[in-house]
Amino acid sequence: MTYLLALDQGTSSSRSIVFDALGRVVAQAQLELPQIYHNLAGWSTTQRRSGAPSWPRPAKPC
Image 1 (tube, rainbow, N blue to C red):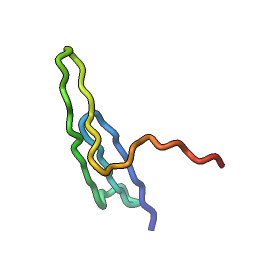
Image 2: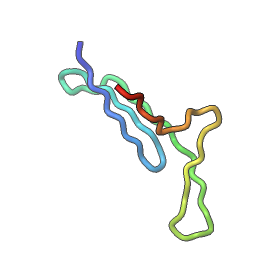
Image 3: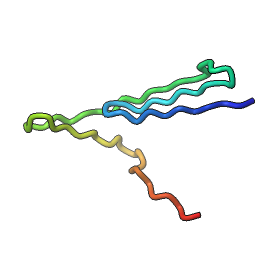
């Protein structure tokens, strides 16, 4: 069976959705990313979860 995985890396969360060959949603997941707001207007950063891999990881040469 054929599936399509869609990934969305947003500002406040990461989301994935798996579709089957007919376009039906088979599975989905979302992970909230904690935000840190600074005293500077418009500034925020995402806090990395403890034990999470650092990304982006460099691609291995082919």
